Amino acid sequence: MVAKSASIHPTAPAFLEPQVEILAGEVLEHPQEEGEEEDRPESFKLKKQLGLMDGVAIIVGIMIGSGIFVSPKGVIQFSGSVGMSLIIWVISGLLSMVGALCYAELGTMIPKSGGDYVYIMEAFGSLPAFLFIWMTLLIILPTSNTVMALTFANYIIKPAFMDCDESLDVPVRLIAAALVCFLTWINCTNVKWVTKVQDLFTMAKVMALAIIIVAGIYWLATGHTEYYKEAFVETNWSVSSISTAFYQGLFSFAGWNCLNFVTEELKDPYKTLPRAIIVSMPLVTFVYFLTNMAYFAVLEPDEVLASSAVALSFASRILGVIAWMVPIFVALSTFGSLNGLIFAASRLFFAGAREGHLPQAFALINVHRFTPVPALVVQCVMTLCMLTTVDTLVLINFVSFGESLFVLMSVSALLWLRYKEPHRKRPIKMWIGIPILFFFISIFLVIFPVIERPIELGIAIGVFLAGIPVYYFCVRKASKSKAFNSFMGKLTTVCQLLCCGLPEDKED
Image (cartoon, rainbow, N blue to C red):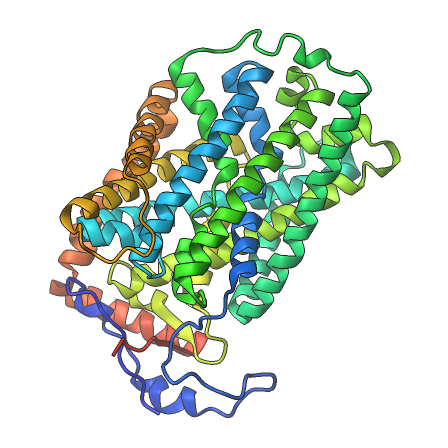
């Protein structure tokens, strides 16, 4: 059996040509492993095996992760009051819903895996798309994974060491690293395992939040409303502070566009993508609002600010003998969220390699499991590197800035394609006012937090701009360097052998 060569972007350097000869004659003729499916697909590519419930589980499972157990501290810190915090949570949900509707149009108009990357590529060309994947590889996804892994580790270890005065940074990092490696292994092994884990742990996180919400409603119903009597006292009305508070809130909603990264694996993307968004977004917004109401019913703002594990402080105050359940459910929640994000994000790096913006090794698919193993392993390594810090608030600001910048670029792509190609087939077409509104909101979210935190976000901008010379030398001019091409060709061959991988077939 001889595999077809992968689709390579026209601007791709020579080293991106797939090194398939060794595997074409050997790996695909290897005897079938035990437990492997009997039938092979007629074309060699990622399988379409995600339905509506899988889509909802991926979106809800990624969105309800570490954010709702970490971000309340950041939101109250920058907003200054309980009332403004709750308003920010509601508006963050509405903004995410507006953005998700825009992405529903983009995802059905351009039904390719890769999300923002393929939309920016389609509208603005190669360099902006490369800058997106550059920032995503170095900052956005590794940082998001790190926050989730650290949250898992904190909630697992702190209940056992509540009275310990020693720093727990090292064991927390080790647990987080072990989690990232374990979930990467699952994602490399079997897509069906990933979806089953996602379904199971989505139920666990909903149960965790249900416990918090019911307990909070009971507390309010028994007359404990003292923290709501002067809900807007000490509100910070600074525009830059409010926008930074939105960064913290929007981080909890991060993941509303994650299903766009795996569009090619949806059974019916034209129906499944928008329906999954419509089900997921109102549900998550409602749950987040009630959860924060519960937090502030039981804990005063200073207690929220002082806590590195808000849900644990909440449970210790009100749940008594069953308080141990909350950290377990929170850990399960972040476990499932990280699992879903690793699954979705690996498809982005796979798409980038397929288009010539990353080494072709990242676009290899395991011939037995049909999973992008090299892309998953690279994502794992980048996340482990990011575990050098445990300051989640700084990490959240990095992630939120990068996401806001590229969401701005994606919604700009939608508006540009509306102008450039007005007659293009659009199975879903939003009223033009929705993307225009979201465009201006995205500008606000990109500009004002830089004024509030210029050093942190200046570093993120520096990383973004550093991608320009990297693109010039490693993508545009790389074909002129024989040594570089030889090295990357050998890297691709080694990755093929290690992961039993081949590039996917071209579309006929």
